[in-house]
Length: 318
Image (cartoon, rainbow, N blue to C red):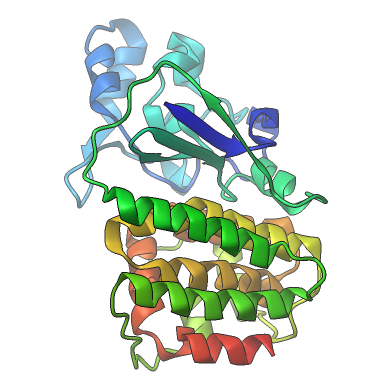
């Protein structure tokens, strides 16, 4: 299998208890089947603690029930993980072991990256000075079984290279690059399937008032939003590049590449309107990308909200 990652991927290091916004607070963590089988072999206090906090969410997933202030029940006063301490990090749930990494499998290729939802990863990506680049290596893992249409996949791979060239063309101001990217997205979408944009009259800023609130700081950001032009800054290029890498090729599953491109544009507008710093995009990511409820709503609005149509987004960029 080919493994593709951003060039800085292996430089990431968790800062554990020193983290300014612990990933062990705010989210319910799924207890995956492999981990549950291991926990069933345990004895003593850690087994009792695990059994006492297992629960089911509204989707039927087995989760660890949160303690007060939405803290993971294993997060101690030093902001360290009692499960990790008791049985080792290799036996914590898969979600915990992987965070803030994400994985997209495309048959013989696996793409892995870092999410803005981690403050350390957010700082890394926000602070890049060179264009976001990627490296590939080959391992002995077999390809993942899939039903991907090969022709569509390779079309999208080639198209994504073009999208990167548009967003990373530093001879053009960032706002114009984003306009060019939207225009390119319209052309690409026509190659895949029809895309009808909606007329939902939701206000642009209400798009970001998520029903499921994880960190109240995000509400404060939205309440203090200010409309202004997109800055011609490298961090805006990096934000758009992140969205293109993370989501563009997933259009092979739903044939909706235009929404993925809209996400890249909106990512830049989030920082432009809510705060030009890595903390802002971190808060948005933690609120939205890591809440199934919020993310499903956002994806729906990408197609149904009039304020997120290509024409309306281009008005905000001019």
